[in-house]
Length: 551
Image 1: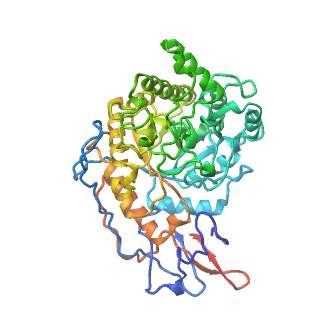
Image 2 (image 1 turned 180 degrees about the vertical axis):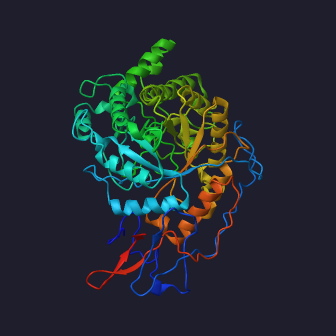
């Protein structure tokens, strides 16, 4: 039975001559991706000939973490030795953000089917998909439409893959890598229009509709339900709809905890050019519910004046730490007031995560599916004393305080995996004026998870297809400094991933992650046919049609 892709898609673009060559265009008899042992093959056929594809000489993924320069932060660790010890790490691949259409149906199912088959042949463990609140509960409170996700789960099961599902309570659009727009449910936006304080607000009064403010977590402002109740009902509906798949196909539930699904404040919004890298961002504590909480906390501390507003000297989104009174080297952040404010601000964030994860644990307990929560990799200004960009996002991590251990302990309390980003980044790749250290940040988080006794999983923060990025992930997944990785999720599946060089790099990376870091020997030639090929078949009208055939 043949599966035919007769038009270009967002997953595999058959019209992209840079991605797939036709048999007549091959300069040598064969060209291909890495050969693996699939249970089924995706073949290309031609009316004139059947092209056999194989991979070019495989490129090595060599590369080690460079020796660390002398670090400024006292909690940053020395670089690990080059001889890394790793467990086998399963690799998942994120599906496109628009896997489902705005009507809730699976987008381009034939292309998705072919893509999943290719990923299975590459040896990946499974895929990750966002279950968008804005699509599922679009038609009204407690009115859920899971049908598109049901079709996807069945397709994933058919190919013998596993699934990580993200309970995405945030808006899609306005952040790095957002390729489509999926707002919050219309009925929620209607409530926001009536009460703008439902969303995060900065000191200039700018509202951010990405996510409901955690200041109203326990207030019944969403048509008689609190945000925590709304999230809980949503997760409960998912559990009931997919009970038979939990713990089997649906291996993990990643619980959305904020903007981009991450446990953080939306301190660096890119929409409309509000923020640009490497700006410090701004505190998001100016909706009336957050202001009321700050006021009550200040009064309880005996310093009523501290509750009138957030820091007045914290600068603007695109400034640097030394441009501000709060974040500069000996700034207000390290004063009695600064410590009070940051304890409150970061404490509210951790309390928010605790509430949602407590509900998720109760709902999914006994289903066999793991729970995870995502923490953002905010690596810019990491080498400064105040770690300004982390502070505005809600991570109270400074030269004198480890801000990730409290987060890791909160996750450990509920048996939740900490999923962390920027695993692919190297310090030497970052601009010098931004004081970045993604490597130091990753090492700190690895030690925090080890201290708290919680599993650590990883993602790449930006789209990368090169061998150097994969080599960095391999290096950071070792056990020599803190926790090793329990899983890695690659961002993201799209047509670029299936370009020959990119595909070859992915295949080798997956094999090395599953073989404890050893570089497998991949064959130079594939005499039996490649795993993912596209060629020509003759249609009924005698014309050539590009086709991916399942045989």
